Amino acid sequence: MKSLTRMVSGITALAFILPSFAKAEDKSIYGEDNRLDYFEAPADMKEMARSVVSLWKNEHVRVDGNTARVATANFGEALGLCPSERFREQPVGAFCSGSLVGEDLIMTAGHCVLDEAQCSDTKFVFGYAVAERGKAAVTAFPASDVYSCKKIIKRDLDKQPTNTVGLIGAIVGNLLDTTGPDYALIQLDRKVSGRKPLPINRGSKVKEGAGVFVIGHPVGLPLKVAGDARVRASKFMRAHFTADLDTFGGNSGSPVFNVRTKLIEGILVRGGTDFVKSPEGCTISYSVGQNDGKGEAVTHVSVLKDHIPALKSAAETPKMVELSPEDTEFEPLERTVSFD
Image 1 (cartoon, one colour):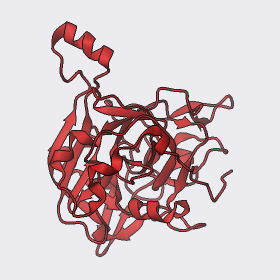
Image 2: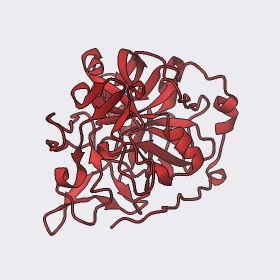
Image 3: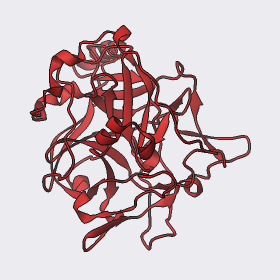
């Protein structure tokens, strides 16, 4: 994820900074931009999206009685976007994404919450989305939808070879592409009410060619669902797999789901370039062909599954994930609204 621009919101008295993460990398658009707002997504994905959370700095969330409000900036103004850019009039503000995987457990990227101090300075907000066609994004929430960090249960951010030592080991590690995991499991200050924990894949790792989709907050925008993507590489020596998912900075920590099983396969952590300058001098999203670019990196959920209590639902049974690429035909999500 790239270092993002400093922005000031004219809407609130709070100075707003869209954070940068030195250990993260950019994300990209592959082929057609498949991002959908919450209200456009199919019903089953809407239900899953209710359990995806946005991460905010404490100072950008103000609780007044039973209502909480978040400080945001205008996306187009903040990044100097070209008029043709999608979502340019929507707000931005969240710095990462996460998913509810237990009654009080949030799974996100390790580079989103570096230590206990940063975790204590983070608010976890559910419901930041465009809920209805033609309506503005929800930026005021019931205070009950805002949670704080109690503690970090488990965290890892190791981008070095994990099973090798010394110069020779590093060379071997590079050849095997054993990039380490990037994840954090956070216990909230209380149990989450009104939302269901999302089931994870507790079986074998997702196979190459499998259809996947992601739910999260690209560039800190209101929640987006992006599908029509496939796993490019998923090797047993890797702590991550790659996929041609349409994601940006802010998607870090987003859950990546298997199209067929609807189980979480991993955590979106890094990828290609976010934005570039157009010949006119304004900013546009960087895009490549569907099969081009290096792909987005997703930490396998298998690296932390032992720290996530199993759900009572049978959806987490391993037998559901033994799919071959030919069994993963994916019908693309259809966009139901166009953008200038």
